[in-house]
Image (cartoon, rainbow, N blue to C red; front, side, top):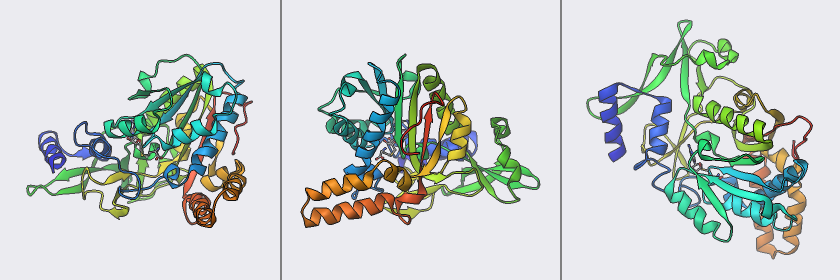
Length: 356
Ligand code: SAH
């Protein structure tokens, strides 16, 4: 309720919020933001992510990280950065899976980029056996060594703007509030010149269609690409979304594992938008994009099937069945296997990253 009051006052004072401003406040308001006040993951929360489905996921990412480190020439010091680490499960699985890679742990400066104090606490507990450090944002990361960066379901949480093609021009979807305190969406003139972002695909958008752009994601990818280009390294992002920029309203709210209206349960429902992977490639123009593959293909390319077989040999019947279910959930065409995509970047074209 409190967040709704704060947003109402802000709108009354300064006018409607852009969708990006609304998302930023709902998710990241320092006191009342969705991520700042809770652990949203798992059965008792609002949604379940791939690392929480099975250790198989993090182990495969661990294989990818170790392989990438080798391909970078096994630097004696490097930053292993995870963006938006949730409960810390993915990093814990990566570190466990790489335990036997000679020299890897000694070389790794493990950094977690996290804005939520609640989740940071969870990460501290989950990674208590390891030497790790935290940053709140990319610019806090002071480093001059190569970097290997991973992020699962991080980019979908970064704010988007929704543009609408109308009368041959453009308007923007904003959030307004009426005298009864009810929030509603209105279309207003654009507040920023999005066309300067070089997104020519916007000219193909038809009348009344919605086009989503994310200056926050673009800015993050640009900043990261400068870091990786100058220090050397690679990045891997996994998320739901589309390979090609295309119109559509993908903003969604999820509350206790069910979709709800974006303006419902404000600050208590997760707000995300599908990731436009083509836009990520454009923003990280300094880096070499290794390609975009589906999560199912990526995990199979890394050998998840073989790893599952090995685990099953040590498992009883019930555990074996659970491994099969997890494998299907992660890789199945009608589950996470196709909707989720993986994009990889390296500073240099000569490096061929695994999985693509
Ligand atoms: N990667 C985890 C969690 C995904 S939820 C998993 O797969 O389970 C999104 C995560 O990103 C949370 O940890 C959230 O607190 C974090 N996050 C969202 N926006 C952020 C931002 N702007 N800066 C840093 N962390 C952010």
